[in-house]
Length: 73
Image 1 (tube, rainbow, N blue to C red):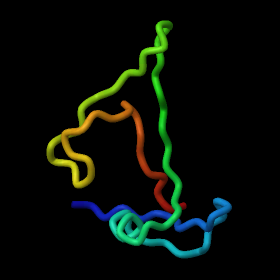
Image 2 (image 1 turned 45 degrees about the vertical axis):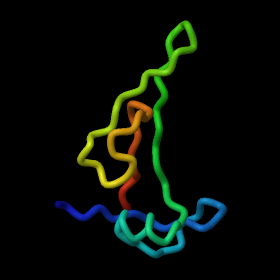
Image 3 (image 1 turned 120 degrees about the vertical axis):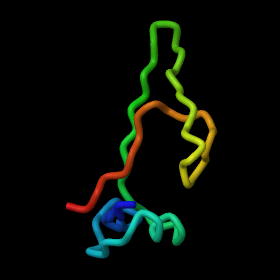
């Protein structure tokens, strides 16, 4: 599996200069950037999808349809 590296942020969203793997950032509970797009229809219904059972976090649970981490750089 390809290792994903992410910029570590301080509590104000400023890069600290530290770059760590996604796994380590999550294990240590560090601030980092992510993106989420919510798709909402005219009835205020939110589009969700079921996460793959093979995901390392929240496998098989319902989640927002578009989300991800912002890689370093």
